Length: 365
Image: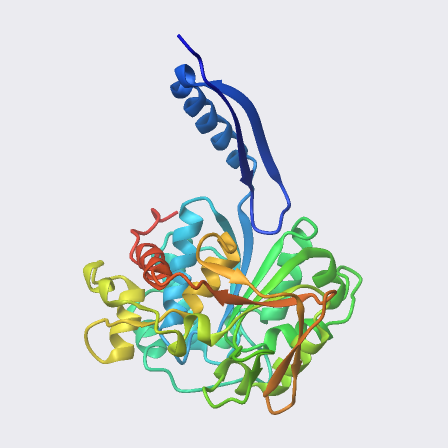
């Protein structure tokens, strides 16, 4: 009997951009196919066991759009799967009801003790279709602005306690807190805000911008609320950020993208505050909404996976009026997500996000 041999090589990459690759190369025979498959499975699971959960600091406005609530649900679902650790949840607005909504979702999802913070001083305050109603319907810890710390203090404490180059900062809103963090001076107990970012932050994943054309530029014809409503903070934070930024543009996941989820929240329990946020936003039954903030969270935790591609590095040349042109630079530390060209990819991304959005909550601590 002739025995046919083949050389077989497997690779595993643990975490986007970590550069950790497990490689297995061996020779197998057709007679040992089952044994080879078992070995591949065992090595793969062993390799994945070395991947640590991603530390996420989530900064949201939780005010103007229900996708912020959806994003927080996705983040909790990923944490339930052991893929990330939620270090803190803060808001980038002066509306106490926005932070109350964050806390209500945290409690429902089984993490009632997460650190909270909100903007102190100047910041955006805009009407919300759902935040005040969620604050009235659900239990939470936020009784007044004085009952919670300044978000920058939360950033300071949380970043200082984490391993170097380990924290992914996610903004699904305005950049008020990051501007304030960059301005924070050193104290006897803590380094300056800038030094904390350099030492502790792995990257900033920023939802915002329209990256159209070649080179991409944004004339604001499609809008860009996350930059525009606190333009001074956006300009300063993006211009002065001392580390890596990945932008999740609106053409990838917001209204121009065509991607939507949300209607299946109607099948979740009626006491789900995320379901209620979508219902209040639409004034009735939960309906589909764009996935801007949900996709931002998914990328921040899982990386590109099979959902997106990444642009070449460069720099966002942002002007004070929030128009911009992208400058490609080989040594640049900024980039932006790209849609995959596969015609079925949109449906795939929607399916992944929908499953996370509607996942059952973690048991309450």
